[in-house]
Length: 567
Ligand SMILES: [Zn+2]
Image 1: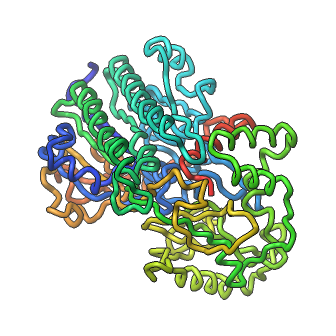
Image 2: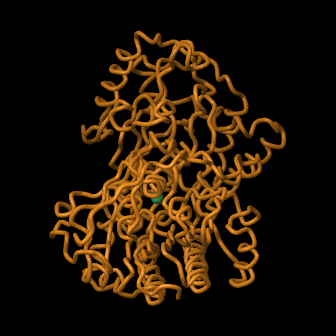
Image 3: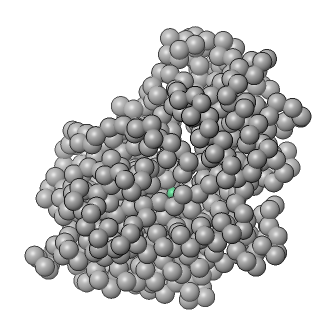
């Protein structure tokens, strides 16, 4: 070891972990590693960013900034001033990551499986990219030769687990749970290998994706209040999520055994929490009912309707095959597919606003900005107010409770160079709803805006968990005040936010904090022996190679569809 007295920080991400699932396991002493960290350190509720989705949330963590500065608003987002949708990757993030800042200061970083780190960027140390990496054939490591080395060392590697869209049958559920566990084991071994190989590391981070994947797929089996719960299935699958937290706890024990010493701070966190998903919300249909959006009379897109017919009639594994046939027959379909499915039937000449994605992002259709915009600039605020009122009035008819917890004008929550790419209106859902941009229900029959999972909802019927704003934060070891949190683990640390972690980690490493970070050092969590030091903002320079190929986009799309991230 080069210098045994230097401060070091290790971060373990539990993507999607929530206290509501962890607390009962902690109470039964089923998570000894986390339990010990909490006992010796502090814990808090960690608020996610808006929207609380993995690609944005890990970007908020990595940059210490809100979306208006890092410039991403969804897994796929609207290309600027156009209706076209594009899948994002790390090269579109417009702000420096923690590992970029540290690398530029010659601090050694080991970064494994953080979502949205592909294409890989050069770091001082090693990086293995995570979610949104097309596949094992991609150049998913820095340095490049590390890929071969890892495959040789581990025998195999899994970046992400492919999940079929549609209703999973029982045997595929078992396979899925096993494969997720295998993935966690391999990624932990990769992390251990890199720690061993780079004993002089300063910052090391591993993200376990297992909780996110499994909570999306298995929530209904462990939640007796879920509409799709049944006791027989619960017996078989009800423990999959809690088992995963336990094997991750054992994997984390292995890591911490390796890294713990008096100079090391250990941080465990999630990028967002989780809860039940019970209803799909057809927001564009609602806009149509409110006169904000208009559909064409005729089905405008034969491909979309053929695909929809195939999806409605056929079950799960066939969906991929139907799509494949479509792509072969219409080679140019691919890049427009999602657009066609979601918006092919919208009459732009009579549409003032429309929703995109699965969470509540809404764009106005502005003349001179959108290709077929109709909202005059002088009517922008009045139209936006009307859209906001409509969204605030949208309720679940079963409970009469609002669907959106908050509805914001974009400038109320975002600021920075990328504000102009942001949705004009941002609806935040912190409850059991999923916005469905694509209406898979076909043209016939009565359609309700808010529909309970089950019956006809093939595309979301096998995801039964949804993200929540409240994630977890545990900190222990060097520089951390023990018991900084009270019983509710919220008030003492003043509800830290994801964007506070990057400045907090820089502070722990004794490094100046770029003054354009939006986050602040988490108050109350750190021993007060340091004063905070700021550095001038660094100009961001993109050192990644750009875009996905068509084949890569298709891989990404299949994977996101399996998690219910495509509307
Ligand atoms: Zn996540």
